[in-house]
Length: 377
Image (cartoon, rainbow, N blue to C red; front, side):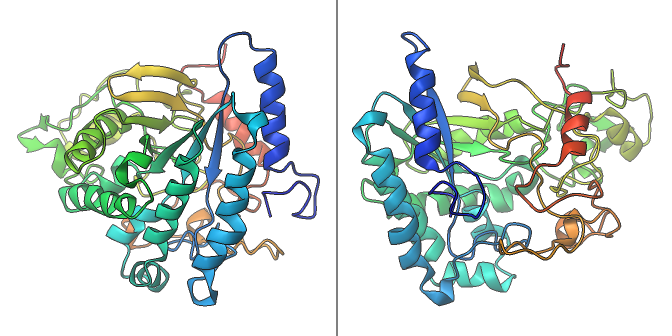
């Protein structure tokens, strides 16, 4: 429904509307080409491990064929229009999808997505169709450090991404790069402690927060994962994007230096700038702030810091809200919920009174402004 303007029953702009506006901006932009980000997110059994943004297409209802003909084909046809040829169109490919095939196969919807080949074949089809358009650049979603940072997930995920991309017309060359932390809250860097450090003879990695992960922030994870992906056969020219739209964690609760505690967990909890209870918490996080402003080439191997998730756009409703958008109620968006095995059965840290996913959440936006880091001047 998002492809065509107004087709969702409201005044929303469609893909052509946004591209037309980008062309107008580009004309006023001088000699510097304009880049526009477009999220491609509608695989059958989309969001198979959660409920807040479950998709309209189902594997069991001919979803893969519909994804190709009713979703990717129309998008590709629009993007290929010659009047958009001077734009640089960045396609963010299927958020959260391929990582779910590595870590969440205990869930029936994810198992169905794996066994049917729908995720792999759908991603491959999207990559091939969009790569064929010279001014479209494909970046595949690669989870975040708090999801794939363990060795048991890190290497297998790179293999999974390689398997899916190899199915595309054009193979792994269709991938210009990968993006981490999409619509998530993981800190770009943790300045006050190291994953290799110790406290009172105990390794930082064995703290409850780190939980034996090999990474504690997105920048180190993205750089290391890029190296692993190249080993998997992706081009040495691939770059990484990091979504910094909501990972600033500024404001009065941001630490200003390392803790002096000799208790391991107290030290980590009081030193980390990521103020979440658990790195698996993903919905409308209380205390979050705008992160680094979008900019190109900010660090080695990183093509850009980007804002893919629009700040102020809800991750999901904090309570059941009947709707005609096919969006379910995920308890991870409920501030009273005690969690599940994917967040260590911890409180969700979610803001209350949240609307449906994708809807404007004014209270969240105001908090993001107040807690921005770097601060909003």
